[in-house]
Image 1 (tube, rainbow, N blue to C red):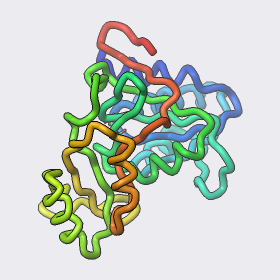
Image 2 (image 1 turned 180 degrees about the horizontal axis):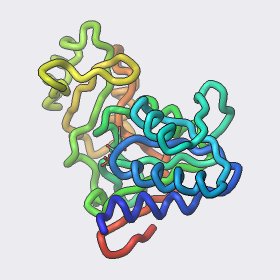
Image 3 (image 1 turned 90 degrees about the vertical axis):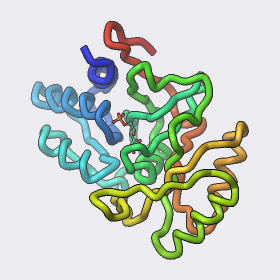
Length: 217
Ligand code: 5RP
């Protein structure tokens, strides 16, 4: 079985009756949401808080009751995918463009579980480009700054136009060059025009990994 499917479905088993569950975005957590939908049909009571329009649509199709983050004090657990995860469970997220809402939901959750196939596990983050969500107004100036810093910025495109996030922003994918990821994240956080970045540091509590033949944590 596909590693993503194995990990995604396994994580759905960790959800208990009555929980408020943050629902991540992407092709791995897709399997979690499908499985949770099946469990809901069999009597599980949960409320899902989606991290993207795509996830909200999927969750509704699966019959999972949905709540807005604004109406939810705290999620018991959020299950989400990741693009890279290091041995300290720091990660890069945002390959699917949902990093801002994903980080908002993750930070409002008691626990965060990531579901990945084993190829996402790395010794050091940075082979995957780091998504940075930026304000469209004046974004070219920000890109020039990133260029001057040697970060090889690339504006994410879709069908010949800049990709627009659910929050109405653009995404610039950059090279994560600094070995000090904490300092690099803080530098990005302080930059005017940057809305959020895909470095998720100290957020993940457990990673569920599927490698095609087994699933492990
Ligand atoms: C979306 C994300 C995804 O969780 C991440 O890109 C992993 O996606 P997939 O499970 O499809 O490989 O961060 O913004």
